Amino acid sequence: MLATFDVVTLSRLQFALTAIFHMLWPVLSTGLAIYLVVLEAIWLRTRNPLYYRQARFWAKLYVLNFGIGVASGLPMEFQFGTNWAPLSEFAGDFFGSVLGFEGAMAFMLEAGFLGIMLFGWQKVPPVIHFLSTVMVAFGANLSVFWILSANSWLQTPSGGTFSEGHFHVQNYFAAINNPFMVRSVIHMALATVETSMLVVAAISAWSLMRQKAPEFFLFSFKLALVILLAVAPLQILAGHESAVQVAEHQPTKLAAIEALWDDQSAGSSPAWTVLASPDEASGSNRWSLSVPGAFSWILETRPQLSQPLRGLNSWPADQRPHMVGLLFYAFRVMVAIGLAAAALMALSLLLWWRGGLSAASFAQWPWFSWAWILSAPAGYLAIESGWVVRCVGRQPWTVYGQLRTADAASVLPVGEVLTSLSVFAVLYTVLLVFALYFGSRIIAKGPNLTLEPPPGLAAPVILSDPSASA
Image (tube, rainbow, N blue to C red; front, top):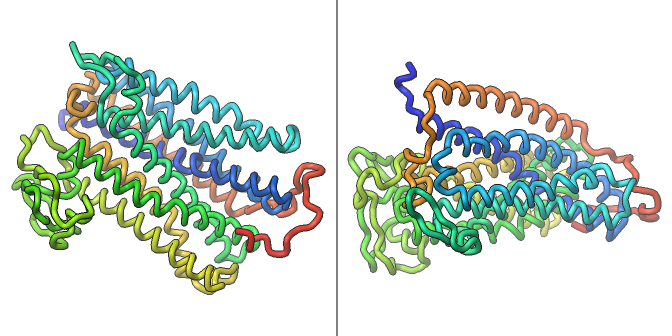
Protein backbone atom coordinates (compact mmCIF):
# COMPACT_ATOMS: atom_id res chain seq x y z
CA MET A 1 0.00 0.00 0.00
CA LEU A 2 2.83 2.42 0.82
CA ALA A 3 4.12 2.01 -2.72
CA THR A 4 1.17 4.05 -3.97
CA PHE A 5 2.54 7.15 -2.16
CA ASP A 6 5.70 9.14 -2.78
CA VAL A 7 7.53 11.14 -0.14
CA VAL A 8 7.35 14.47 -1.99
CA THR A 9 3.56 14.31 -2.31
CA LEU A 10 3.15 13.28 1.33
CA SER A 11 5.47 16.06 2.52
CA ARG A 12 3.51 18.57 0.44
CA LEU A 13 0.23 17.29 1.87
CA GLN A 14 1.59 17.55 5.41
CA PHE A 15 2.79 21.09 4.88
CA ALA A 16 -0.52 22.01 3.24
CA LEU A 17 -2.44 20.58 6.20
CA THR A 18 -0.37 22.38 8.81
CA ALA A 19 -0.31 25.65 6.86
CA ILE A 20 -4.05 25.69 6.12
CA PHE A 21 -4.89 24.91 9.74
CA HIS A 22 -2.38 27.36 11.20
CA MET A 23 -3.60 30.15 8.92
CA LEU A 24 -7.02 30.11 10.60
CA TRP A 25 -5.73 31.54 13.87
CA PRO A 26 -3.22 34.35 13.25
CA VAL A 27 -5.62 35.78 10.67
CA LEU A 28 -8.09 36.63 13.43
CA SER A 29 -5.58 37.54 16.13
CA THR A 30 -3.75 39.92 13.77
CA GLY A 31 -6.84 41.85 12.69
CA LEU A 32 -8.56 41.62 16.07
CA ALA A 33 -5.52 43.19 17.76
CA ILE A 34 -6.07 46.34 15.68
CA TYR A 35 -9.75 46.28 16.67
CA LEU A 36 -8.73 46.13 20.34
CA VAL A 37 -6.47 49.15 19.87
CA VAL A 38 -9.38 51.10 18.39
CA LEU A 39 -11.71 50.06 21.22
CA GLU A 40 -9.26 50.98 23.95
CA ALA A 41 -8.52 54.32 22.31
CA ILE A 42 -12.26 55.11 22.22
CA TRP A 43 -12.59 54.10 25.87
CA LEU A 44 -9.68 56.27 26.97
CA ARG A 45 -11.16 59.15 25.00
CA THR A 46 -14.73 58.86 26.33
CA ARG A 47 -14.31 56.88 29.59
CA ASN A 48 -17.58 55.18 28.69
CA PRO A 49 -17.71 51.73 30.39
CA LEU A 50 -19.34 50.24 27.27
CA TYR A 51 -16.10 50.51 25.35
CA TYR A 52 -14.10 49.08 28.24
CA ARG A 53 -16.41 46.05 28.28
CA GLN A 54 -16.04 45.76 24.52
CA ALA A 55 -12.26 45.54 24.83
CA ARG A 56 -12.46 42.96 27.63
CA PHE A 57 -14.92 40.75 25.73
CA TRP A 58 -13.16 40.67 22.36
CA ALA A 59 -9.78 40.16 24.04
CA LYS A 60 -11.02 36.71 25.13
CA LEU A 61 -11.39 35.62 21.51
CA TYR A 62 -8.01 37.14 20.73
CA VAL A 63 -6.15 35.12 23.34
CA LEU A 64 -7.93 31.90 22.31
CA ASN A 65 -6.79 32.38 18.72
CA PHE A 66 -3.30 33.37 19.84
CA GLY A 67 -2.89 30.17 21.84
CA ILE A 68 -4.08 27.87 19.06
CA GLY A 69 -1.92 29.79 16.59
CA VAL A 70 1.21 29.19 18.65
CA ALA A 71 0.43 25.49 19.10
CA SER A 72 -0.19 24.96 15.38
CA GLY A 73 2.58 27.22 14.08
CA LEU A 74 5.60 25.60 15.73
CA PRO A 75 5.25 22.22 13.96
CA MET A 76 4.90 24.00 10.63
CA GLU A 77 8.25 25.77 11.01
CA PHE A 78 10.03 22.63 12.24
CA GLN A 79 9.11 20.95 8.95
CA PHE A 80 11.72 23.06 7.17
CA GLY A 81 14.33 21.01 9.02
CA THR A 82 12.59 17.64 8.82
CA ASN A 83 10.64 17.37 5.56
CA TRP A 84 12.36 20.18 3.63
CA ALA A 85 16.02 19.98 4.67
CA PRO A 86 17.37 20.53 1.10
CA LEU A 87 15.37 23.77 0.93
CA SER A 88 16.82 24.87 4.26
CA GLU A 89 20.34 24.10 3.05
CA PHE A 90 19.73 25.81 -0.28
CA ALA A 91 18.14 29.03 1.02
CA GLY A 92 18.75 28.95 4.77
CA ASP A 93 21.16 31.92 4.82
CA PHE A 94 18.25 34.20 3.99
CA PHE A 95 15.05 32.21 4.48
CA GLY A 96 16.07 30.95 7.92
CA SER A 97 17.17 34.42 9.00
CA VAL A 98 13.83 35.98 8.08
CA LEU A 99 11.88 33.29 9.92
CA GLY A 100 14.18 33.90 12.88
CA PHE A 101 13.42 37.63 12.69
CA GLU A 102 9.71 36.80 12.82
CA GLY A 103 10.16 34.77 15.98
CA ALA A 104 12.64 37.05 17.74
CA MET A 105 11.08 40.38 16.79
CA ALA A 106 7.40 39.93 16.08
CA PHE A 107 6.29 36.91 18.10
CA MET A 108 8.31 37.80 21.19
CA LEU A 109 7.08 41.40 21.05
CA GLU A 110 3.47 40.23 20.84
CA ALA A 111 3.88 37.58 23.54
CA GLY A 112 5.86 39.90 25.80
CA PHE A 113 3.15 42.54 26.02
CA LEU A 114 0.22 40.10 25.90
CA GLY A 115 0.26 39.46 29.66
CA ILE A 116 0.03 43.19 30.42
CA MET A 117 -2.79 43.60 27.91
CA LEU A 118 -4.81 40.74 29.41
CA PHE A 119 -4.08 41.07 33.15
CA GLY A 120 -2.81 44.58 33.65
CA TRP A 121 -6.08 46.52 33.59
CA GLN A 122 -6.01 47.08 37.35
CA LYS A 123 -2.23 46.96 37.74
CA VAL A 124 -0.68 49.47 35.34
CA PRO A 125 -1.61 53.06 34.37
CA PRO A 126 -4.05 53.38 31.43
CA VAL A 127 -1.39 54.82 29.13
CA ILE A 128 0.93 51.85 29.80
CA HIS A 129 -1.90 49.40 29.21
CA PHE A 130 -2.82 51.11 25.95
CA LEU A 131 0.83 51.02 24.89
CA SER A 132 0.84 47.27 25.62
CA THR A 133 -2.20 46.75 23.41
CA VAL A 134 -0.52 48.76 20.65
CA MET A 135 2.63 46.66 20.97
CA VAL A 136 0.62 43.44 20.79
CA ALA A 137 -1.04 44.67 17.59
CA PHE A 138 2.29 45.87 16.20
CA GLY A 139 3.95 42.54 16.93
CA ALA A 140 1.11 40.58 15.35
CA ASN A 141 1.25 42.66 12.19
CA LEU A 142 5.05 42.59 12.13
CA SER A 143 4.69 38.82 11.83
CA VAL A 144 2.68 39.38 8.66
CA PHE A 145 5.54 41.45 7.26
CA TRP A 146 8.26 38.88 7.94
CA ILE A 147 6.25 35.83 6.88
CA LEU A 148 5.12 37.49 3.66
CA SER A 149 8.64 38.74 2.98
CA ALA A 150 9.98 35.19 3.30
CA ASN A 151 7.22 33.69 1.16
CA SER A 152 7.53 36.47 -1.41
CA TRP A 153 11.23 35.70 -1.71
CA LEU A 154 10.30 32.14 -2.67
CA GLN A 155 8.10 33.65 -5.39
CA THR A 156 10.66 36.20 -6.66
CA PRO A 157 14.12 35.42 -5.24
CA SER A 158 16.50 38.37 -5.28
CA GLY A 159 19.29 40.00 -3.30
CA GLY A 160 22.00 37.44 -3.99
CA THR A 161 23.41 34.77 -6.27
CA PHE A 162 22.85 31.05 -6.73
CA SER A 163 25.86 28.79 -7.06
CA GLU A 164 26.80 25.26 -6.10
CA GLY A 165 23.30 24.50 -4.85
CA HIS A 166 23.23 27.41 -2.43
CA PHE A 167 21.85 30.95 -2.25
CA HIS A 168 24.50 33.49 -1.27
CA VAL A 169 23.07 36.66 0.22
CA GLN A 170 24.67 39.82 -1.12
CA ASN A 171 22.08 42.39 -0.06
CA TYR A 172 19.66 41.54 2.75
CA PHE A 173 17.53 44.61 2.10
CA ALA A 174 17.14 43.73 -1.57
CA ALA A 175 16.20 40.17 -0.62
CA ILE A 176 13.65 41.34 1.95
CA ASN A 177 12.28 43.95 -0.44
CA ASN A 178 11.92 41.46 -3.28
CA PRO A 179 9.56 42.29 -6.18
CA PHE A 180 6.59 40.46 -4.61
CA MET A 181 7.00 41.77 -1.06
CA VAL A 182 5.25 45.14 -0.82
CA ARG A 183 2.03 44.26 -2.59
CA SER A 184 1.88 40.85 -0.91
CA VAL A 185 2.24 42.32 2.58
CA ILE A 186 -0.44 44.94 1.88
CA HIS A 187 -2.80 42.35 0.40
CA MET A 188 -2.42 39.98 3.36
CA ALA A 189 -2.56 42.71 6.02
CA LEU A 190 -5.82 44.00 4.58
CA ALA A 191 -7.14 40.44 4.38
CA THR A 192 -6.51 39.83 8.08
CA VAL A 193 -8.32 43.03 9.06
CA GLU A 194 -11.22 42.37 6.71
CA THR A 195 -11.69 38.78 7.84
CA SER A 196 -11.40 39.73 11.52
CA MET A 197 -14.06 42.40 11.12
CA LEU A 198 -16.29 39.90 9.31
CA VAL A 199 -15.94 37.63 12.36
CA VAL A 200 -16.80 40.49 14.75
CA ALA A 201 -19.78 41.46 12.58
CA ALA A 202 -20.93 37.83 12.32
CA ILE A 203 -20.82 37.26 16.09
CA SER A 204 -22.60 40.57 16.62
CA ALA A 205 -25.27 39.73 14.03
CA TRP A 206 -25.82 36.31 15.66
CA SER A 207 -26.26 37.90 19.08
CA LEU A 208 -28.51 40.67 17.76
CA MET A 209 -30.68 38.15 15.93
CA ARG A 210 -31.21 36.49 19.31
CA GLN A 211 -31.70 39.93 20.95
CA LYS A 212 -28.78 39.35 23.28
CA ALA A 213 -27.04 42.45 24.72
CA PRO A 214 -28.40 44.57 21.83
CA GLU A 215 -26.69 47.83 22.77
CA PHE A 216 -23.33 46.11 23.15
CA PHE A 217 -23.41 44.14 19.92
CA LEU A 218 -25.00 46.89 17.84
CA PHE A 219 -22.01 49.05 18.62
CA SER A 220 -19.50 46.28 17.83
CA PHE A 221 -21.32 45.57 14.56
CA LYS A 222 -21.31 49.22 13.51
CA LEU A 223 -17.67 49.73 14.42
CA ALA A 224 -16.70 46.60 12.46
CA LEU A 225 -18.77 47.86 9.53
CA VAL A 226 -17.01 51.25 9.58
CA ILE A 227 -13.60 49.53 9.49
CA LEU A 228 -14.77 47.19 6.74
CA LEU A 229 -15.98 50.09 4.63
CA ALA A 230 -12.48 51.56 4.82
CA VAL A 231 -10.65 48.28 4.19
CA ALA A 232 -12.76 46.48 1.56
CA PRO A 233 -12.18 48.92 -1.34
CA LEU A 234 -8.46 48.95 -0.59
CA GLN A 235 -8.44 45.17 -0.57
CA ILE A 236 -10.05 44.99 -4.00
CA LEU A 237 -7.39 47.37 -5.32
CA ALA A 238 -4.61 45.41 -3.59
CA GLY A 239 -5.94 42.17 -5.04
CA HIS A 240 -5.84 43.62 -8.54
CA GLU A 241 -2.28 44.83 -8.02
CA SER A 242 -1.28 41.36 -6.82
CA ALA A 243 -2.70 39.87 -10.02
CA VAL A 244 -0.70 42.39 -12.05
CA GLN A 245 2.53 41.37 -10.33
CA VAL A 246 1.73 37.72 -11.02
CA ALA A 247 1.35 38.57 -14.71
CA GLU A 248 4.71 40.33 -14.62
CA HIS A 249 6.78 37.82 -12.64
CA GLN A 250 4.96 34.46 -12.84
CA PRO A 251 3.25 34.13 -16.25
CA THR A 252 2.71 30.38 -15.81
CA LYS A 253 0.65 31.05 -12.67
CA LEU A 254 -1.44 33.66 -14.47
CA ALA A 255 -2.11 31.25 -17.33
CA ALA A 256 -3.14 28.53 -14.85
CA ILE A 257 -5.54 30.67 -12.79
CA GLU A 258 -7.18 31.84 -16.01
CA ALA A 259 -7.12 28.40 -17.69
CA LEU A 260 -5.39 30.13 -20.58
CA TRP A 261 -3.96 27.46 -22.85
CA ASP A 262 -3.06 29.38 -26.02
CA ASP A 263 -0.89 32.45 -26.54
CA GLN A 264 -2.57 35.85 -26.74
CA SER A 265 -0.88 38.51 -28.84
CA ALA A 266 -0.42 42.16 -27.92
CA GLY A 267 -3.27 44.26 -29.25
CA SER A 268 -5.81 41.44 -28.92
CA SER A 269 -8.94 41.50 -26.76
CA PRO A 270 -9.26 38.00 -25.30
CA ALA A 271 -12.36 36.83 -23.52
CA TRP A 272 -12.35 36.40 -19.76
CA THR A 273 -13.35 32.89 -18.71
CA VAL A 274 -15.85 32.93 -15.86
CA LEU A 275 -16.39 29.17 -15.57
CA ALA A 276 -14.63 26.29 -17.29
CA SER A 277 -13.66 22.65 -17.11
CA PRO A 278 -9.87 22.59 -17.65
CA ASP A 279 -8.45 19.42 -19.21
CA GLU A 280 -4.69 19.18 -18.76
CA ALA A 281 -4.41 16.06 -20.89
CA SER A 282 -5.70 17.80 -24.01
CA GLY A 283 -4.36 21.25 -23.11
CA SER A 284 -7.76 22.91 -23.45
CA ASN A 285 -11.04 23.53 -21.67
CA ARG A 286 -13.77 20.95 -22.18
CA TRP A 287 -16.29 23.77 -21.93
CA SER A 288 -16.22 27.36 -20.80
CA LEU A 289 -18.43 30.34 -20.07
CA SER A 290 -16.69 33.54 -21.10
CA VAL A 291 -17.22 37.29 -21.36
CA PRO A 292 -15.93 38.45 -24.77
CA GLY A 293 -13.16 41.06 -24.70
CA ALA A 294 -13.17 41.38 -20.90
CA PHE A 295 -9.76 39.94 -19.98
CA SER A 296 -7.69 42.95 -21.09
CA TRP A 297 -10.02 45.25 -19.16
CA ILE A 298 -9.66 43.16 -16.00
CA LEU A 299 -5.88 42.78 -16.23
CA GLU A 300 -4.81 46.13 -17.68
CA THR A 301 -7.99 48.28 -17.61
CA ARG A 302 -7.72 48.84 -21.35
CA PRO A 303 -9.51 47.43 -24.43
CA GLN A 304 -6.46 45.59 -25.84
CA LEU A 305 -3.50 43.85 -24.26
CA SER A 306 -0.34 45.94 -24.25
CA GLN A 307 1.88 42.86 -23.90
CA PRO A 308 1.58 39.34 -25.30
CA LEU A 309 0.49 36.60 -22.90
CA ARG A 310 1.77 33.05 -23.08
CA GLY A 311 -0.65 30.17 -22.71
CA LEU A 312 0.11 27.03 -20.73
CA ASN A 313 0.71 25.00 -23.88
CA SER A 314 3.75 27.14 -24.70
CA TRP A 315 5.68 25.69 -21.72
CA PRO A 316 6.88 22.11 -21.33
CA ALA A 317 4.69 20.09 -18.99
CA ASP A 318 7.42 19.95 -16.33
CA GLN A 319 7.86 23.74 -16.32
CA ARG A 320 4.29 24.78 -15.51
CA PRO A 321 1.83 24.26 -12.63
CA HIS A 322 -0.61 21.39 -12.65
CA MET A 323 -3.97 21.10 -10.86
CA VAL A 324 -5.20 23.86 -13.17
CA GLY A 325 -8.81 23.29 -12.15
CA LEU A 326 -7.95 23.86 -8.48
CA LEU A 327 -6.07 27.07 -9.27
CA PHE A 328 -8.77 28.32 -11.64
CA TYR A 329 -11.59 27.93 -9.13
CA ALA A 330 -9.61 28.87 -6.00
CA PHE A 331 -8.88 32.23 -7.61
CA ARG A 332 -12.54 32.75 -8.51
CA VAL A 333 -13.75 31.76 -5.05
CA MET A 334 -11.42 34.36 -3.54
CA VAL A 335 -12.57 37.10 -5.92
CA ALA A 336 -16.26 36.22 -5.63
CA ILE A 337 -16.18 36.30 -1.82
CA GLY A 338 -14.40 39.66 -1.84
CA LEU A 339 -16.97 41.19 -4.17
CA ALA A 340 -19.90 39.64 -2.28
CA ALA A 341 -18.58 40.98 1.03
CA ALA A 342 -18.24 44.45 -0.49
CA ALA A 343 -21.83 44.27 -1.75
CA LEU A 344 -23.08 43.23 1.71
CA MET A 345 -21.22 46.16 3.27
CA ALA A 346 -22.75 48.56 0.76
CA LEU A 347 -26.24 47.25 1.53
CA SER A 348 -25.62 47.59 5.28
CA LEU A 349 -24.35 51.13 4.83
CA LEU A 350 -27.49 52.01 2.84
CA LEU A 351 -29.70 50.61 5.60
CA TRP A 352 -27.73 52.53 8.21
CA TRP A 353 -27.95 55.77 6.22
CA ARG A 354 -31.73 55.35 5.87
CA GLY A 355 -32.07 54.74 9.61
CA GLY A 356 -32.98 51.07 9.29
CA LEU A 357 -29.95 49.54 10.97
CA SER A 358 -31.11 48.99 14.54
CA ALA A 359 -30.91 46.13 17.01
CA ALA A 360 -34.42 45.07 16.02
CA SER A 361 -33.47 44.88 12.34
CA PHE A 362 -31.46 41.72 12.83
CA ALA A 363 -34.42 39.86 14.33
CA GLN A 364 -36.84 41.25 11.74
CA TRP A 365 -34.62 40.34 8.78
CA PRO A 366 -33.14 36.87 9.39
CA TRP A 367 -31.74 36.83 5.85
CA PHE A 368 -29.69 39.91 6.66
CA SER A 369 -28.36 38.40 9.88
CA TRP A 370 -27.50 35.11 8.19
CA ALA A 371 -25.74 36.90 5.35
CA TRP A 372 -23.40 38.46 7.92
CA ILE A 373 -23.07 35.24 9.93
CA LEU A 374 -22.00 33.31 6.83
CA SER A 375 -19.59 36.07 5.81
CA ALA A 376 -17.16 35.00 8.58
CA PRO A 377 -16.41 31.48 7.26
CA ALA A 378 -16.47 32.93 3.75
CA GLY A 379 -13.68 35.31 4.73
CA TYR A 380 -11.53 32.41 5.90
CA LEU A 381 -12.30 30.50 2.71
CA ALA A 382 -11.18 33.49 0.64
CA ILE A 383 -7.83 33.68 2.46
CA GLU A 384 -7.20 29.95 2.21
CA SER A 385 -8.10 30.04 -1.50
CA GLY A 386 -5.65 32.89 -2.02
CA TRP A 387 -2.85 30.91 -0.42
CA VAL A 388 -3.69 27.90 -2.59
CA VAL A 389 -3.30 30.13 -5.64
CA ARG A 390 -0.08 31.61 -4.29
CA CYS A 391 1.67 28.35 -3.39
CA VAL A 392 0.21 25.73 -5.72
CA GLY A 393 0.53 28.18 -8.60
CA ARG A 394 4.28 28.46 -7.90
CA GLN A 395 4.80 24.81 -8.76
CA PRO A 396 6.85 22.98 -9.88
CA TRP A 397 9.20 25.35 -8.03
CA THR A 398 9.77 25.91 -4.32
CA VAL A 399 12.22 28.73 -5.03
CA TYR A 400 10.76 30.05 -8.27
CA GLY A 401 12.99 29.27 -11.22
CA GLN A 402 15.83 28.02 -9.00
CA LEU A 403 14.85 25.01 -6.86
CA ARG A 404 12.25 22.48 -7.89
CA THR A 405 9.89 21.10 -5.26
CA ALA A 406 11.01 17.55 -6.02
CA ASP A 407 14.57 18.57 -5.13
CA ALA A 408 13.56 20.57 -2.03
CA ALA A 409 12.04 17.65 -0.12
CA SER A 410 13.98 15.50 2.33
CA VAL A 411 14.60 11.86 1.46
CA LEU A 412 12.58 10.08 4.14
CA PRO A 413 10.86 6.72 4.50
CA VAL A 414 7.34 7.00 3.13
CA GLY A 415 5.91 5.27 6.19
CA GLU A 416 7.36 7.86 8.56
CA VAL A 417 5.92 10.79 6.62
CA LEU A 418 2.55 9.08 6.35
CA THR A 419 2.59 8.50 10.12
CA SER A 420 3.44 12.12 10.93
CA LEU A 421 0.79 13.33 8.48
CA SER A 422 -1.82 11.14 10.19
CA VAL A 423 -0.74 12.29 13.66
CA PHE A 424 -0.98 15.94 12.62
CA ALA A 425 -4.43 15.35 11.16
CA VAL A 426 -5.66 13.85 14.44
CA LEU A 427 -4.02 16.47 16.67
CA TYR A 428 -5.29 19.38 14.59
CA THR A 429 -8.78 17.92 14.58
CA VAL A 430 -8.66 17.80 18.38
CA LEU A 431 -7.35 21.37 18.52
CA LEU A 432 -10.12 22.53 16.20
CA VAL A 433 -12.81 20.85 18.33
CA PHE A 434 -11.43 22.45 21.50
CA ALA A 435 -11.12 25.85 19.84
CA LEU A 436 -14.70 25.73 18.56
CA TYR A 437 -15.93 24.54 21.95
CA PHE A 438 -14.25 27.27 23.98
CA GLY A 439 -14.97 29.91 21.33
CA SER A 440 -18.67 29.00 21.33
CA ARG A 441 -18.70 29.20 25.14
CA ILE A 442 -17.24 32.71 25.04
CA ILE A 443 -19.84 33.79 22.49
CA ALA A 444 -22.73 32.05 24.28
CA LYS A 445 -21.80 33.59 27.63
CA GLY A 446 -21.50 37.02 26.05
CA PRO A 447 -20.02 40.14 27.57
CA ASN A 448 -19.99 40.96 31.26
CA LEU A 449 -22.21 44.04 31.30
CA THR A 450 -21.54 44.66 34.99
CA LEU A 451 -17.77 44.84 34.60
CA GLU A 452 -16.47 48.15 35.92
CA PRO A 453 -13.41 50.01 34.64
CA PRO A 454 -10.40 50.56 36.89
CA PRO A 455 -11.09 53.01 39.75
CA GLY A 456 -11.15 56.63 38.71
CA LEU A 457 -11.55 55.87 34.98
CA ALA A 458 -15.31 55.53 34.63
CA ALA A 459 -17.22 58.41 33.06
CA PRO A 460 -19.72 60.09 35.36
CA VAL A 461 -22.33 60.14 32.59
CA ILE A 462 -23.08 57.24 30.22
CA LEU A 463 -24.37 57.98 26.75
CA SER A 464 -27.96 56.97 26.28
CA ASP A 465 -27.19 55.46 22.88
CA PRO A 466 -23.48 54.67 22.64
CA SER A 467 -23.97 52.86 19.32
CA ALA A 468 -24.77 56.16 17.68
CA SER A 469 -21.15 57.21 18.02
CA ALA A 470 -20.11 54.34 15.78
